[in-house]
Length: 143
Image (cartoon, rainbow, N blue to C red; front, side):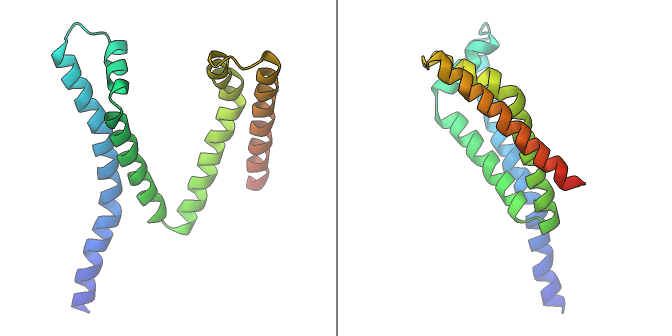
């Protein structure tokens, strides 16, 4: 019984501590890189620092990778009930982005690629409709 309790404690510790540590390390990688770039050129604007960070693909890659691994571990190691609530919350955020961000920001990006105006209009409308449909399904499930 004692050996089983000893084996269980490190597992609980690992399950509750490892994902937040990975997320914090991922975000800290960008913060530290930004500070280093700022120290190299104190007169640089925030826009310049961000563009320099993006020019070095390993920094955003490491940040996104570590953060996503931490989020994935937290998701997969959580209970089934927590997983269901997390999926619903994520789908709600996706629906909100499709309704509000799809017709605006996604279209700005597509305009920069010179997509025809009629296709832009159809994609904006489709994004809005899909977001509303998803949002309505999620709200229907709560009742």
